[in-house]
Length: 96
Image (cartoon, rainbow, N blue to C red):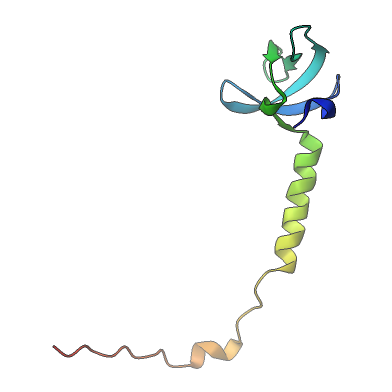
């Protein structure tokens, strides 16, 4: 994400101790970055760069729904019911 996209009071998914968690941005820090609250543990967290913030939970849900809709459109067609009646191809034996 970019610094201009981050809004105070919004909830984002951030990497905290290497794990993605939900955080709420509380305020900005004078030296750069933001103070945030980890919503899982209610602890204060310092976000130094916008790179640690990935996206909002709402946009994650929208992306999952869009992905599911795309998969429904591109699912392969069911096989022909008579395809199981075909004989399997014989493999040729190698001559030595």
